[in-house]
Length: 74
Image 1 (cartoon, rainbow, N blue to C red):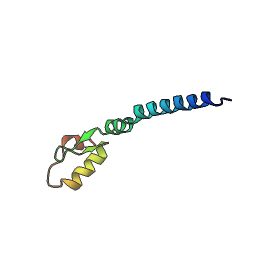
Image 2: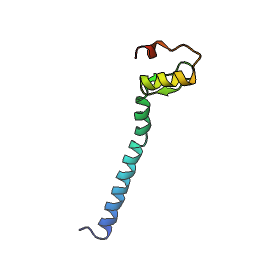
Image 3: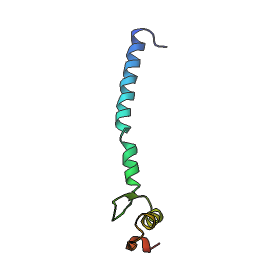
Image 4: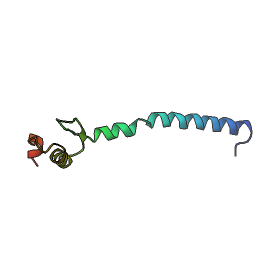
């Protein structure tokens, strides 16, 4: 078991390692979420994950406009 100066050095080294990995992983959640959004509404430019949600969005938010060809395939 480490004691004294060795223990302090070990704790500092571990803290630096943890900080480095925290910085590295900080942006991953945002990139992953953006990668899941495949469809973009041609009217309001909102990004949506799947075609069914895109169709529902278009029918509820833009009812007077004709459906885009992407929504007709479903």
